[in-house]
Image (cartoon, rainbow, N blue to C red; front, top):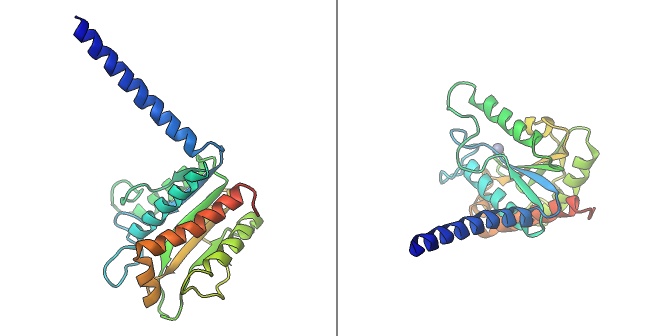
Length: 224
Ligand SMILES: [Zn+2]
């Protein structure tokens, strides 16, 4: 009898500890009440652009988002990820999947309570000389433009970037789908040999995530 009671008590303590532990983790990640949406572009059957060795843009986008998330949570900024796994957000991979995927992203963004949306992508183009990160901002939105300007400047200081890259206005669904300040970051070009090799290195993706997360924190915590 006593042994049974002991087991029941241990189970209760373990349950309480784990539930309490989860709550503490959530609160510490978002102590400030300030939230950003990180949107890893593509996913599932939509791989985005492909590197010469077969690596998918979609996988690297997700990796960069998780690295940014880790950094932001150190500053107690809450992070909502539109895509949290390698899969897409379209449900079943049938006709119209891209639209369903984008609509799901819009739904997550609109219900996020976020103050900023940052969408992560990788570029490819026919001109091999094009290199470096490129930031696009929401049409006719000064907050998005200010953030994009600061972020572009810091990204241009990374190794092998194009120092002359300027942020540009972008007519993209993910930027237009809400009233929240939003930017889309093309993190570099798979069509440029040096950029491609950098993007495939863990260390470089950490540097990218460091620059992006530092700018997000500055923007959200009033540093601009
Ligand atoms: Zn993309």
